[in-house]
Length: 126
Image 1: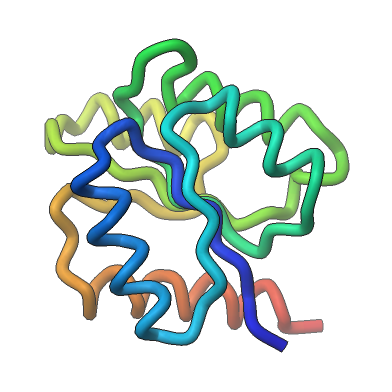
Image 2 (image 1 turned 180 degrees about the horizontal axis):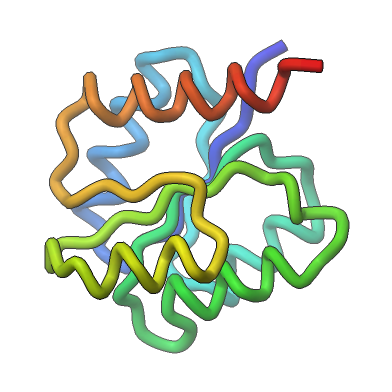
């Protein structure tokens, strides 16, 4: 069965790029421009992994991540945080909030897919 990835990023260019990369790799992709839209997706359909940009308007990525980790149904959901700042503080904040992995934008397709694959494989292990 195909795995579903929810991409949450306010940049249409980044969403489009991630959509193409992930679909080409065989994933079902859902796209959300902010954390509030992402929460609606999570309530309405099953998702196997979240890719979240840290810096977004309305609800930033760290706030969304904290909301996800606060919900029992989503606590085990693998989450990769993305940032264009490359700041170590962003990485520390993401890990503290419950991120499974952290990538700087723009992440190369191979690095992104390898990270997703590792997290998906870990999730399927008994």
